[in-house]
Length: 442
Image 1 (tube, rainbow, N blue to C red):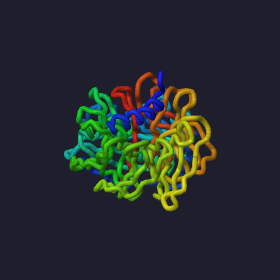
Image 2 (spheres, rainbow, N blue to C red):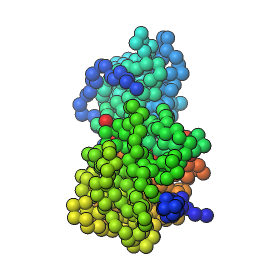
Image 3 (cartoon, rainbow, N blue to C red):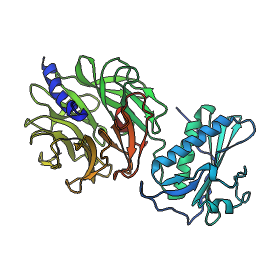
Image 4 (cartoon, helix red, strand yellow):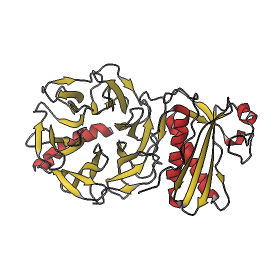
């Protein structure tokens, strides 16, 4: 049985043959941040025990809203790989008091909580208010207090904001909870492009054409998504402005037009085209589709381009050396160098946001995600012996990767630290999710 990535790569050959023939209110109150308390964290390397009681639902507030808020905050914090949420059944203090000086510290110290986050939610005339108080349990001090405002339908949004406030208060770092993913989903019976929240919720369609749509790519400003669609028979490339819904053709040359990757300034798009032979990497104008340059010429199938963060290079997959390997082309000199040497099938390179590393897919007891330094050294497996894992995409801060996996017998999106120490599912297994790509932060 053909493995997923190999079938996909070989499928590009077949394609060449066929071708030739919501405004939400933000926070209101300024945080009261105490100096001197910081947890030193690295994703997956620390499991600081923190206590997270269920939010206090004030009079008139739906208890279900409080429970949903709590579940969002808990899952967000667990996804970071920084914390271990202490089982609420172990909490000795069951009082409803959440403000400083209104509850004892010993019950929280006895369960060895490093930090405590108490929340409450209340109905207001203008919607909902959610408060969070973050405490240093050892010192018995408040670290932060903040209020967030939203509508009844914004309960998950409020949960993400609270989780981020807890993370900032304890570590000084913002989380990825407000980010979005674009991915291919088969929930309609066809392969369509969708956008979802980082916890797998808030799914909505980008395409609804009943055809095969693949390889979504965000523009750097987060306003556009480019992808390849077979809706007119040929694998053509399109781009959609998300706010207006306006869609335009980027590339519809006979043959393959696949693997969109925006340049850092958003003005160009790299893609693979096949025009009368093997596919090569080209660069086109991101708005007009006009050809800007041709990056590769012959020597085998060249696909899956990705710009370096400085825009000076393009990494791509090529079978010019036999099998498939990752190469990098210097756009100013045209010189090309090989990055991967281990294994006979390496594919889908993507630069980290700081440009120091490249994530890619390699065949090794299935297909797995690896990370390597930009110069090809220090190759590190992200996944191992966990089914087939493909299509890595970096978080904007470079601390995490998302990828598609079938490790649980269905196509899902998972998130991982680059060293693979901490991994969690993003989607719930429904929808047949593949090819996730992380949105830029705007």
